[in-house]
Each structure stands twice: as structure tokens, then as C-alpha cells.
Image (cartoon, rainbow, N blue to C red):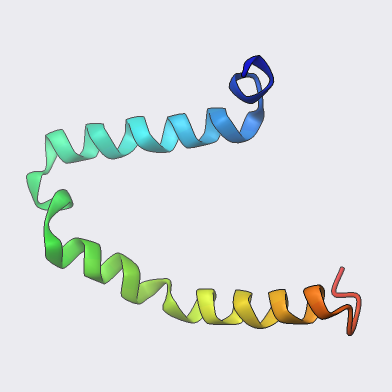
Length: 65
């Protein structure tokens, strides 16, 4: 558990969560359903491309590094 709490990924996730809470308190529209769907829509293309890269990496077909 201590290793997880000291990792840089945990720190970044904590900062993002704190920023989301602060922005949500300043602007209540941030936590609306419309904003959630806008965030999901904007990440769809990146997610699809990432899945394509994941399939290539897992299958060992090519080195994408």
C-alpha cells in the first residue's frame, strides 16, 4: 500500500480528482450529464485508436515503440 501511495501515478490521479472537485464547486454545470457525454464523445476517437494499438501489441505483430 505504501508503494502505491508514493507512486507518481497516484499523485497525478489525486491532483486530477482535487481539480475536478474544485472546478465542480466553482461551476456546478461541470457535473452535468451534458458535460459528461461531451467528455466521452471527445475521447471516442482516441480510445478507438488506442484499442487498435493494443491489439497489435498484444498479438506481438509489430513493435510500436
